Length: 287
Image 1 (cartoon, helix red, strand yellow):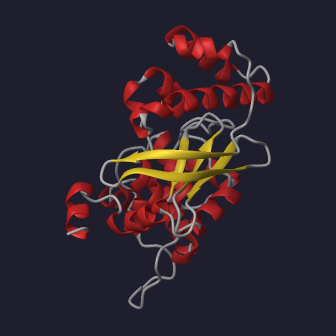
Image 2 (cartoon, helix red, strand yellow; image 1 turned 135 degrees about the vertical axis):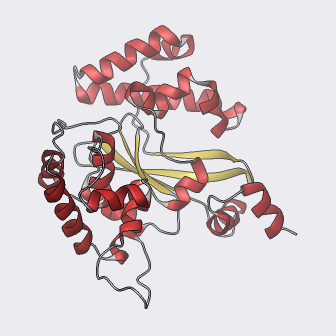
Image 3 (cartoon, helix red, strand yellow; image 1 turned 90 degrees about the vertical axis):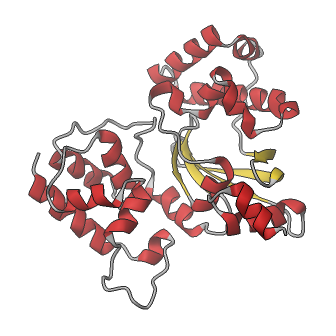
């Protein structure tokens, strides 16, 4: 691993990004034109101390997951991401679609501009790749699970806790939507081994999935009306929209509510309390 070259490369990529490009305030006291180290660390989900050590040419070899997170935070294109992996002496990943997939720049650019509504980029198997702060506050942080379990569809049928995001009476609807969407993805991908393994595993582990799979319903989820259970704000009714990348492998998902609706008011409150202690924050704001 070339510590000094990796450090220099990270600094050069950080210096070229303007705060406004990633939704950060410029501020009158900013001494550098690009991002600060702690801002890169925040965007990548790393500790500031760990990232600082990388820029100083120290520390252990970063994992593939860390490199993928840095590539997203620094808005690297495909060639730049591959170079980052080379400098860290890690195998360059193939065109990935799981938790280490490289977010397509066009979707990431749009995500950066959606600051007033919850939004996130995910793969066609519902692995979240990037979120804005409001999405984190609404549905929680990106899962750290790897492999098949990284995708929300897989967890929906194998982990009962995943279903707490929606009211129980809505579970049947979401199950049908997820299965129909997965069948459309499977057809588009052809004999993709990642999808084939996932379907086989779900058919073995979930009787509900196996039954729904046999209905052969197929429909990409382009829009939906959802009720999301929030720990402090209760049930939030929102409209969910999807914008697909050109190859269909990734999608930008964002939530809206009609102006003047209860959902719109809840989203406004969510932007205030963010990801802090929800129960305490809500009590303070409503008393």
